[in-house]
Image (tube, rainbow, N blue to C red; front, side):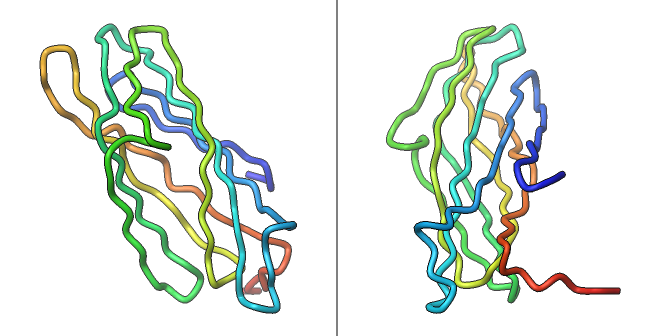
Length: 135
């Protein structure tokens, strides 16, 4: 995947692409503080208008510690995407370990009032400080 790899998943015509980036300048490895930004692009490739209602994230650090994050919308917004529309935002997450994994879903609501989960692909948070395990 490479350091700037993109991760992608499509659910019911909703394509979600994530690009994680390690933020060297905000991280302090000596204090076990590592920070990443992740850029998310949500594209409506389907034929129904949808609105992003809620988000859910599962974040696992290198020690296996799990954080769950849930809440309304993304970056304070609940964007409506008509067919062909796309929406992008950038957010971030700190970890106490030099690597981790994230995945989750967005709860979408269709024009017809039907709710479904658009899956966010699992993506890895990697930093230059990660000690690679040699098999």
